[in-house]
Image 1 (tube, each protein chain N blue to C red):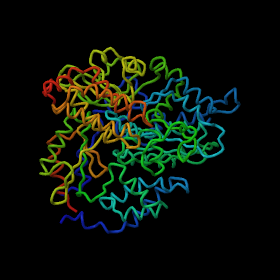
Image 2: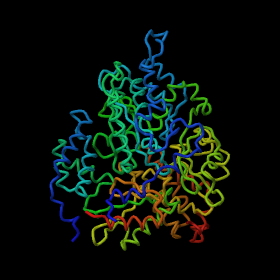
Image 3: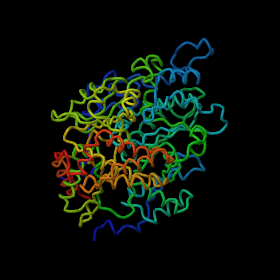
Image 4: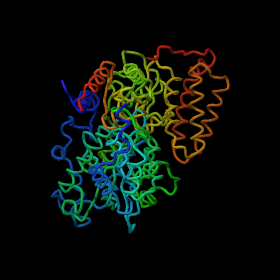
Length: 460
Length: 171
């Protein structure tokens, strides 16, 4: 046998059957009808794709708008529809998308930019990769609609460097969209022109922070900028820029086709639509699950096959590694939406649900996360650069049975001195898991310090 | 001596420069620097790492100071600042992967190859490095081969199969 490298490695490529093409989504809008082979433009159009773009441009054969006298939707109508939908940013912050779009100066005389943040590196999050890989045109269409609404003619999609195959897939989809006239000059014969390109990162968690991403896109180190000024006034190349997450753009075509109210009704008030949750860790079926906002956590856990090997649920990190951990009894009472998770003392974040069973040591889990934040701190702000090192060294020595009585108070003190004292949110993201773990599992840390050994020795 | 250490002075190919030009075309005329990330990865794909000579060529191509290019090389984790093995394998060990044996997969891989984490095998075929989140948490354990190919559900059996398969690849 003499296989080439590609053939050897192809044996280990995921088919995404387990994580994406299963029948355990609930009312999916973004992941509906995908099978891994139907990513191309022809398939997307057969699923009703690019109808929303046709609709706003008045190219869908509908009668002229009685208010404006022309077919299609005005910029204000598109933004009003997105506001009405209750769509909130899917990258982690949960900021209302329609409101963000309305911040863009509409009459700005110079170039403006639209940027898609596909730098998906928040531990636990693996949804944008599957959207871009298996349904790239939904992101292209969503971006084209956003560009129209804000009067933007150039956009970039910045894709996580580690998913290079997905970057190549997106580039292929861009070529298809250009050839079919859905991107480029005078789209579908209208006055609207939009050029869209793909860029990639190369291994820097910080570039998921929107201003670090802009720096990276400008060809520099990915170090976040002071805000204000916000990107809507000073963004890419110093020009007004709107940045949204991949899943946010992917939600837009459905909203335009079905109306803002219909989207809102898919979820619950203030938490419109469906959301893709990436479930990882100790479950039988790790994967992505697109479900209505406000679905009980217990239902999501059930979709993911329950806790692995029939073990007992211990804790869940509900929104990516930066969100504070919640113990089993708390998360089991939550519904999966921004407001419920916030009320419980954590964040919905990017929708990355990291599940831990009763064999897991919380000290060891935090040790790994603290290492990550130390490694990925960009080094710009002293509290984060030095503080993340302090956090890791202390958690590490507690895990190794070398912790001191004073360490828990010191950990809290260091976390307190990072939070709110850095340019970007990475400092907070490093501090919050520490505080969450100690708040809910203090006895495990104390046991490590007092007995020099773990309460949960079965960590597998 | 392994072959990876012998080609550091080879110039970038004409094909690489054509790919640079395609990347530059994505950006405004006065913002060529935006293509630096892509150009460095193209150079690395061709030569296995980013040499000082490649940085100089890219700096000239994009109208940047060589030090500004070097800053980018050193800031981002995936650029190899030195030659690596023919196959660089990054194993994610972040928490979601760790919960599904990511650390165990890393240990099995280095034990199989008879090296420590971060090292290159004596024959110059494999380099193994720990990695941070690759955004494929539901596929854990995951490994990234030569920056471009993600391998999923890497059980010990699959790791053995991958190592044997890559060893048997013909030039």
